[in-house]
Length: 316
Image (cartoon, rainbow, N blue to C red; front, side, top):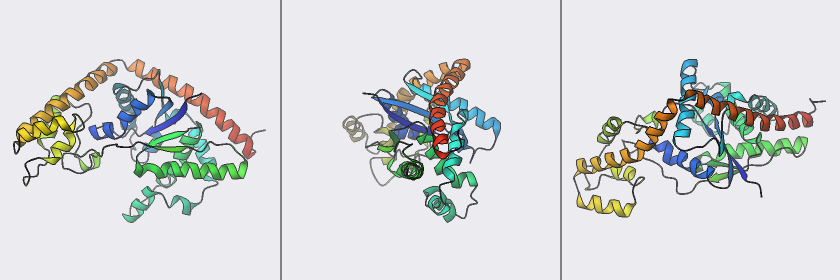
């Protein structure tokens, strides 16, 4: 039996943090080692909605490629490539946009959120669900790993595929959401969900000094003997049975518990940081991975686009 295909899109939006790892990246590594043909796409055209500085974009893309391999994504086991290296993405997006209505796109969570906040919405932001649908449909993807709050992305791809198939005949496979269960919502240093927008993150490849600074800034609740914001990050690194002993023995000793978390974070991050440092010394290899990934992705995407052009009547 052939492997099922999966696709994950990752925006090159800056330095990843511990929440990104436990919320998604850890599962990407596990998936490549299971029975899946995994596609990991750096969605730089999606990122163009927010990053509009050429030097920053270039730097972010290169760093994200290094990050992905540093956490364990292996280009021999999975496909790592840039969205912008495969022109079929934007070409298919236009074709799909011609069969998509504005009221349908206005149902997107991102659009409704921006509208509620009276934000000015670019055409790219408005139409991004269709580019995302093109991203998925080009590769005959079986499953898209998403959190429960991202399920709508896959629903847009399914709806669009069904509409196209109804109009032009069976062309696209209908993807399924792969909801990864028991994915932790990682708290930040202030107790909210860890997010760059809240400025409450612990960088995934942090130095010991950065780890110390972040952990010591964790907001503690003085009303209880167990600092839950510290504990909730700590339990990602150690079994709760083991932590129970540590926290029982150090009730109210917040400094001691923070120091224990610093040590465990350093033990977890150090190998990742060292992997990253090695990869960063070999930029030609990183560029080779992107180039080879683009060639393989283009072969798949162009074959699908050729079929699409034939059924819509523009290819003779």
